[in-house]
Structure formats: structure tokens, C-alpha cells
Length: 149
Image 1 (cartoon, rainbow, N blue to C red):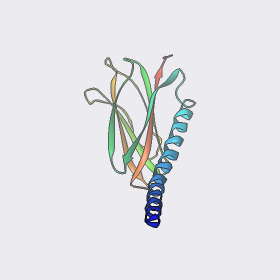
Image 2 (cartoon, rainbow, N blue to C red):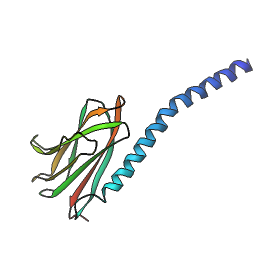
Image 3 (cartoon, one colour):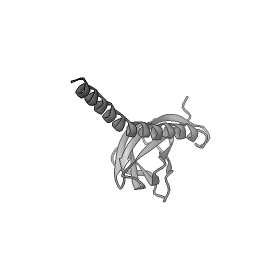
Image 4 (cartoon, rainbow, N blue to C red):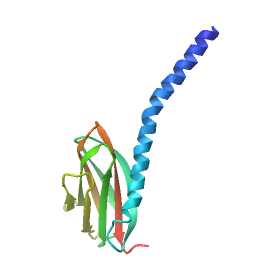
């Protein structure tokens, strides 16, 4: 009876270790993306400061949209980043009614879009994971706005 309990406990620990490994790998990707977001501060246009950022998982060949608010009638620069498995990430920025404000569809994993927000300040970011070495990649976005404190 003690052997059965020990075996079940060992099996439970083995299952926990097996499921924890991917989570730890995910954390490494997410940590590196946050570091990249901080590095983007050095590359943004003069007078722009970090307003918001985030990390999301996107399946290869898929696009996701994220709705955000930025100050109205303000210069905005959005930068995208991708983890080490990423080959091509594209970025489109739309206003509240779906009009394209800017896009970067180059064959790279570091899209940058600069535009002036409209009166309502509502935007949608479209992150399109065109190519990834795995079935999904972690992507990040950084939103920089001009003149904010």
C-alpha cells in the first residue's frame, strides 16, 4: 500500500514537472520581450515616451486585433517585437471605424508604424504573424506618444 502511494506521488510529481517545462520556456520568451520593449525607448522618435505595452501569443499565419486608447490628435509610434522563433511579424494600425492609419508589412520581425491619432484617440493594432518557426510565437507591442509626461 505504501509503495502504491509512493508511485502515485512520484507520478504526480513527474506530471507536474512535465507540464511546468513549457511554462518556464514561455516565461523566458515573455521576459525577453519585456526587455525588448524597454530597449525600444532608446529607438523611438525624439519627444515620444512609452504610453503602453503588452505581450500576446499569436498562432503562425494568424492575426489578432487589440483595441487601445491614445491621446487625441497626437503623434504616436507603435513598435512590434517577436520572440526568437519569429521570422515575419506585420503591424497595421486602424482608427475606430476601421480606416488604416499606417502599416509595416515588410519581411521582418520588427514592425514600426508612426501616425497621428484622430479626434477620438481610439485605435486598433493588428499583429499579423506571417511566419514563425513553431506553431505560435509571443509578440509584443510598444506604444509611444509625443509630449506626454
